[in-house]
Length: 406
Image 1 (cartoon, rainbow, N blue to C red):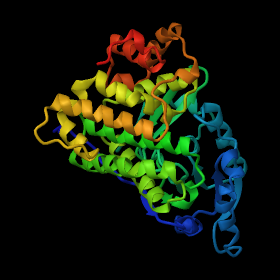
Image 2: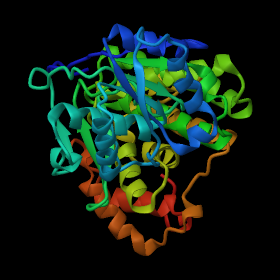
Image 3: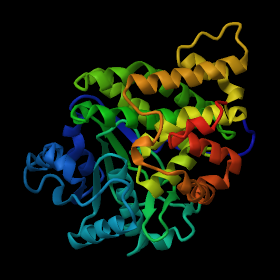
Image 4: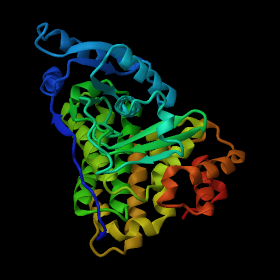
């Protein structure tokens, strides 16, 4: 544990439980919101989720609650700066004073960018992140007086409660990062009913995204008892419930536990932020090869742990216990191998690939990928040695025959 200064601000109020989406208009009214924009994506519109949320506002008698001023659906996977800018223009056009984000990480992060742009009076979010990384902390960062509610439809990013937004820069082909303790939602609504239609494959890799948050928080040099508590219980919940929700997406109890695990995992991750090599690699490969973030994390996770053992060994006993591994009388190196195997077993059990063979990444691309890893903002806190980046790259593209197992 570090003795240096750290912040822990669980600023987002969490409302969780079956049917909690019904509270959304009242929650906005209590924040004095008048004109709300609902941001989501076309897939969730087709799935009926957008309409489920929108109709809540029609149930409020005219003049007694906030008005739904508009619905914006043009948000895509790994949304970029232009998406944020277009969504911001829409919010201004309809004279919105409150923001409702309904969706996965891309939607939730896009709305954080919209909130920041509206508050700062920006027309291009790229101007706020010129070098790829913006870090603003209290007391320089101040409360943004725009009512903001997030409703996650996946249990993975935890973006509903995190002070971090990842926004793709189309010009640089780089996932840029914005960190500000007030860009996260004022309130998050965790309603498991909104996640039951999520396909099994997406359920699996978003679950691994949440697991990665918890594991990188646990291993972080900046970890504290606050973050450890959230990280370890997140690992326990995901180990128990992820196979269940992949096999039976209608299991509401398990779905809710996964949503809560996701929120706890990102809370641990956000307030222990330092060494995040899995995310570093996932950002770089995701930006270059357009691999979904959760899937990239899932593939990299066991390979990174076995490749950077010194980062994970200090808490390997607690880590192993959270994964329900017997630890008595076992050497730490043995436990690390068992942890890696347990993660690989879970990966296989929920139907996730062990590499990116389906993406057709050639060895010729590894040099560019290595440069992207080194340039990613995450590398500023923890730089992965170039030879390790190359070894991991060979493994994830399916060229394991060229690399000995660590």
